[in-house]
Amino acid sequence: MPSTKVADASVTRAVRDVRAALRRRRSATRAAGMRAYFKRDETVAFYGVALPAIRALARDVWRTHRATWAVADATRFCDRLIRDAEFEAKAVGVLVLARWEAAFPRGLLRTARGWLSGGHAATWAAVDLLAPAVVTPLVIRFPPLRSGIVRWTAARSLWVRRAAAVTFVPLARRGQALAESYAVATALFDDEEDLIHKAVGWLLREAGKTDPRRLERFLGRHGPRIPRTTVRYAIERFPPGERRRLLAATRPDRFPAGSR
Image 1 (cartoon, rainbow, N blue to C red):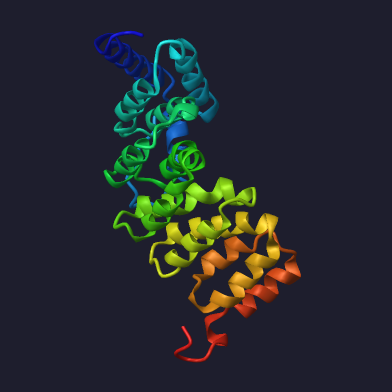
Image 2 (cartoon, rainbow, N blue to C red):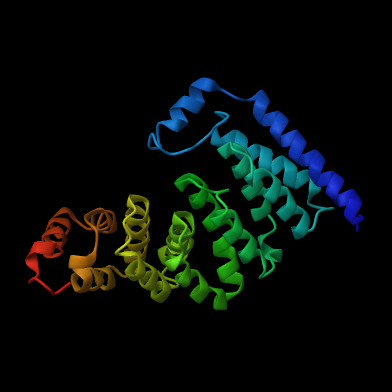
């Protein structure tokens, strides 16, 4: 095993090389196109590097260092890059760390939450990369952590709350962790943020793929509380007639005053 000093130097060189590679590939035109997917008031920065190139960079880092780095080294690498302003640097860091998922320690969850609450993954795109790549493997590896993720719904940080929903999306898609998925959805119904409404709708849609009747019952039971954006996302996979019926059945004005 290399010494800590040698490992730190290796991480520093890898971070430097990734930043240089991203600068060489930067494209102002592509960066402007990527920026168009975000609201005007969102603070985002891009090199303008396409996703295949980002994935190739991450793969190269892993191939170079997989025999000498431990998960702690990959975590330091990610910690350095996720603090960069540009999304592509954050993405390379997360994708490299994800290669060590079989060795993720339980304590990595606190680090991931720190990245979220600290504003280092402060866009929907960064959250939607970090949560499935790092947090989901952690709750698979350590199932007792699931209840803690449900409690993230009460966080002050928008990004922590969105991660609570997005973390369970890959599991819900496979019919797993449905109790936690529906608990997260219920806890976030009153959230005022549109990015939360969309994330919860996405989570419910995936939960409904393996048990559509459960989703239908859930929507019927909570209809007046559910933001309309969430409902529309949640029912995307239903046939057109069913979508129209569920949209009508969950309208707030169908319920008596005070029933909410």
